[in-house]
Length: 274
Image: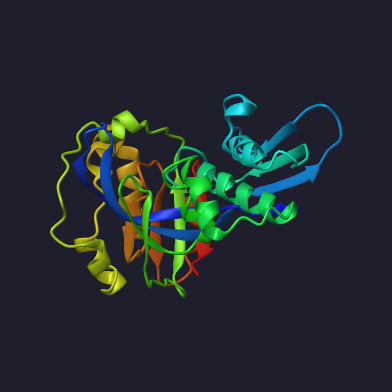
């Protein structure tokens, strides 16, 4: 059985306060986009509990630390009769890009195993399992636009459609560490809620919708700031870094030509938004 985990972008990202546990509470909009990995699971024979083969974008780390393996083992504890499996994952979503690719893989793995082996897990239960793997993993269970708060783990459904717009996504060959992203953050509540901003025309978002991580990231990596400026020069009605970076996206009213040439040397994709 094959499934296709998709990425997300952050529309706005406000760091509102520091928590006693040293994490930060935030507010953001998660919006799914049509940029996908491929995840295949087949039943296997033999003594090994699982095998994992990854192709496409390289992933560092041992297999047991991969979120799809953690998802399998998490369900295996409660469903011990679930058989051994071979996992093949083709990575297309770039890593360390603020696009949620690893979280999507984990959530889609839970959904795939539930369907393939008839585990009978409800949507709410799948969200609970996913939340144990990462703050934003549960978003990808229902995979619909949400207003996210807490540490990115509390979701409120919203009515938002960007159908008819085009997304240009650009990721330079730059890794942004979480430490760098938080280095100059000063938590504060926004003057206007993202839930209000998204009800306004997209053309107004440039003046009202911010990503708090941009200040510190752009100072350290001006190349990322330059990508955002270029997207606006090309006619984007809104552009922003996604999450804590390093990918930047632009929302356009019409399809854009020569994107690959303009952003040569970067991972670059154009997609119709749904």
